Length: 472
Image (cartoon, rainbow, N blue to C red; front, side, top):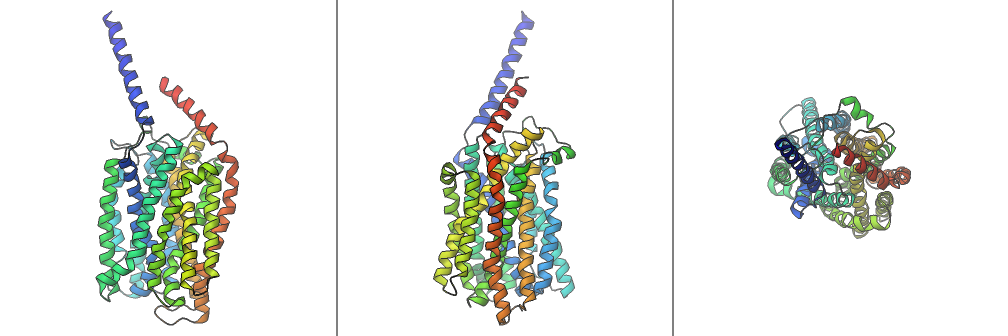
């Protein structure tokens, strides 16, 4: 009788524990939880978009590195850095702490990332060769740390909720937060540099980025405190070979990776050349801040995603975003030097980029499910690291290198009046090259339609498998 009572109590405790786990997994997230997740991308974009948008200009027109050397530095560093994405993914998949799997990295890397971001925008008095070495080291380490802190931003999404609609909503919050971070750096960096520098751009950039770094670190800490992972209770470290097996025959993941690379390639080309276009082609450097500020229109595109997805599909929504972005770039090219038309076209393109930049992050969660269904391996950190950070790094590296080489080839000289050929190179890099990249990305995403049709069935089969596993 006593033994039977003990057995009954143990079974009852087990059932309570299982019910607690189920309730945690099925509970709806609060607004604060969603805001905390959004703040990760606000902080990340506040720093990383400052790096991608202004570092080429900083190197050439402030630090005194030739444009050819600067472009090569960005390419080499980004190629080397891009391969740390799968490494960080493996690290995430092998992280098991009391704070979770992805979440603790918001705490651990916030200060180092902010610190090296500041170091990337100071100008020590060095020879030309040593300047290049300093730029490579600081830029590379900053990129590695960004991968380390951005990988868990995407990897944590499948572990924040098991509801597909809530994942899309979470991703929308994240993208709005990311757009806010980009809006701040795009709109206020140059005015703040002018304000703090008082004619000394070297001083202005350092103080501005220092302020950004402090704000970003605080936001990452807030995210650490107010997020919680629900799918890692029984997670075990994956052998490295199993993480790579998660890619096997995972064609939807391959498609998203390729489409995402072309998005970031196009977006980086236009964001890294806008200041050159404003200063030399339009004759007013302040136009760059105006256009960058108008990028906030991306938030409208992000906010529309849940409504568009209900009427179309995730694949069609991604293609729509890339198509609008490409068409907007074409409109810019047809606007001549009319800044009003350029601004309107830029806003139209921003609506598309807002949609296009958001969708891969939400869709990567579905490819994690696909990998688990296809290969029996759930490698969320590994798959999302390559699908997000690798794409961003590779796209931004090539996206900075291509225009720098095109501009160098046609005679660009920093802080000089440009020749007609140099102005033509800047115009092509800013207008037509991004349009081509966005269109190629849209064509690639057409291949994803057939995989999206099977996602609901895959999730149902996974839920049955997980329920049977928990019942053992």
